Amino acid sequence: MLLYFSVGIPSFTKYIGHDGSTASHHKVKCVEGWTPWMSVNTPTSTNPNDIETSKGLRRAYSFCDEGQQTAIECKPVGTGGVGPSPSPPPYADYQCDLEKGLRCISQNNTQCPNYEIRFACNCRK
Image 1: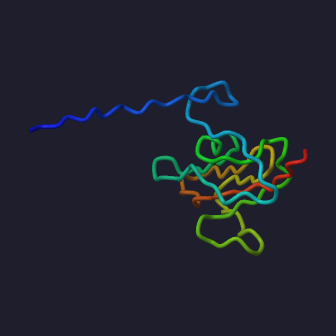
Image 2: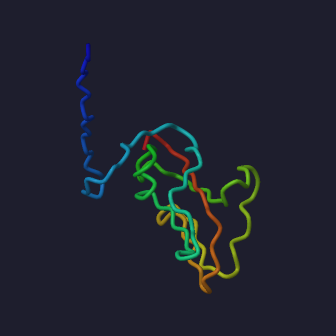
């Protein structure tokens, strides 16, 4: 005797993101203090730059809204999280700020390190 079980195809509800797109986005989730370290972009030989923005990270992580972010820290992946940030690479335009996130733009096609960032969140803002 053969038994057949119906196996349904899962359905997914798209969440309309902050930028109006229907790409996968995580909702805003404010937890007081520092977020975990986050990274979604990895430099490659064909794209040596690393750009980590709040908007880009939102597609993979849930964390506080931009208006609740009070500080940012940036560091190369795997370098620990205590102490001063390492010096930026001399061959790149490097920026780590709350408004624009992390930007490491290579000036000579040398691959930037793979960076990760985190935000300090004030949920009462």
